[in-house]
Length: 217
Image 1 (cartoon, one colour):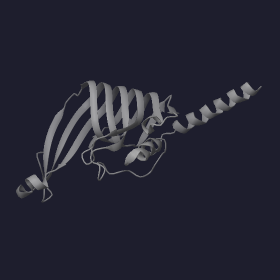
Image 2: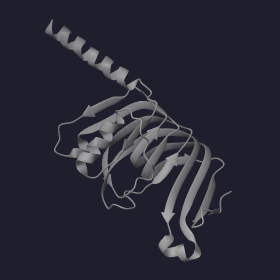
Image 3: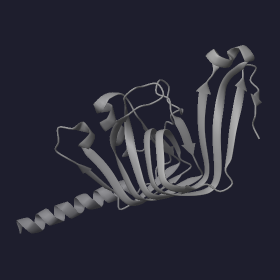
């Protein structure tokens, strides 16, 4: 009898957890912070729906932005990490692994402040922009301090915490598949075992002090 009640309680807990993550929030956002506690907070915030969008790249942290119309992936894993950013030697991040990914209308953007080096020529900053069509990749690994999307959905999402003295191993998430609609990621590292980028363009755009942009096409 006790075992039956325990099993029923476990089943109800799984049903509640499943219903929580079955919701596609209107807006979905996470933002990272400093130190080990912020790493845990970063992962925890992934589980909550939000209404405020962050401005990427994050002030005081840096990053390059990956955006798309849609990202679908398999073999999703997310766990805390510490890594280098443009403005920080060590900063709390979320590590995201995907066994495979399809990215619809990729846009990768990095803004570089060039005022000290090129300000005399009227150039305030430079945008390095890579665009592509329907991108496909295998064994993608990313380190991010922010993810936002119009909606997100997981299939078979599992969240597991662990008893450990290492804060980076306290919690992890995994799912066989996920879909992000209109996503934007504040990214500090990306690697791929293999990747195909149809219709790729690379643009280096100068943002002038007078507000004009040079080099766009």
